Length: 61
Image (cartoon, rainbow, N blue to C red; front, side):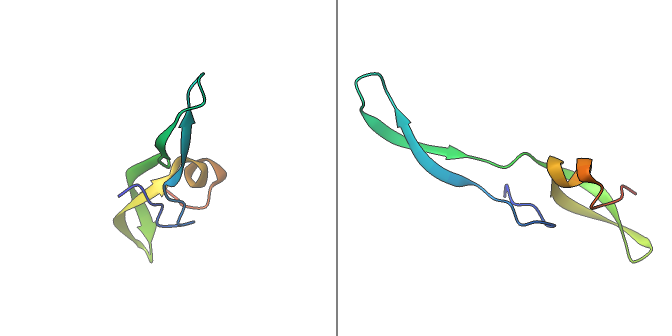
């Protein structure tokens, strides 16, 4: 679900490391918003990350 339709940024994985150095799984999700975007003269709803919104790669409808 948390995947950008423009740059395809998605979740990535790693470890939580405690003070005693025990490791558990951790997941970082992309900051993805569901927005209406102008596509081919019409409006379409897409999942777009906030970095693509801020950089102007898409235009809101």
